[in-house]
Amino acid sequence: MIYTSESIERVVEYFSNLPSIGRKTAYRLTMFLLNQNSDFIEKFAQSLINLKQNIKYCSQCYNFTELDPCPICRSEKRNKSIICVVEEPADVNAIEKTNEYHGLYHVLQGVINPLENISPDDLKIRELLQRIKSDTEEVILALNPSTEGEVTTQYLTKILKPLGIKVTRIARGVPMGLSLEFADEATLSRAIQGRVEV
Figure 1 (spheres, rainbow, N blue to C red):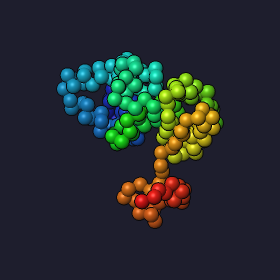
Figure 2 (figure 1 turned 60 degrees about the vertical axis):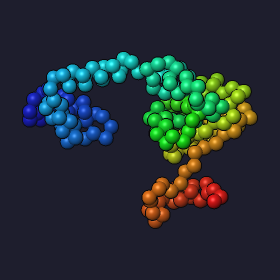
Figure 3 (figure 1 turned 30 degrees about the vertical axis):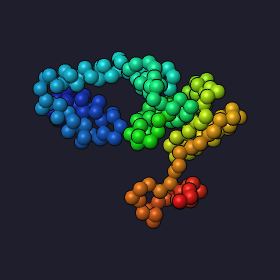
Figure 4 (figure 1 turned 180 degrees about the vertical axis):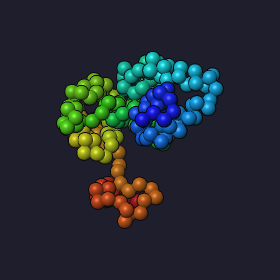
């Protein structure tokens, strides 16, 4: 039922299609836009158009970029002997925020998921194998701790180990600030298995 106008409802509908945005938040965002001047609205709309027109995948790592290859792949300051494998471009951003990693990345564009009909052939695994050179010393598997992430990690380990390079995975365990009593069994189990000497 339309209480205000078709134009408002259309914008609310588009906003509510975004992840984590319900109808109430979509309505608030729409009201915010209505209270902005025309210049803001035009720039906002143009930025969305530019986003779709200018952003593409890097031909080397498959991260989002405007320039090909992306700034990370082009950088002379990166350690080119290490490749960190992630699921999605957002994962690159998350790792970069830590300022702890200075190697290259490879974005798989998903994980193996038979229920969704996503097989290894649907991912950028072949491209990863083509990137591994004689000077590649380590591949870090930084996939999400889900069933699909675990299956993909095992698959990648199986095909990378015979290449004679070091294959590692990011540590998993109890997050900072979480009481042990609230951690689930799988997280605690991984934390105990992945313990390190102090």
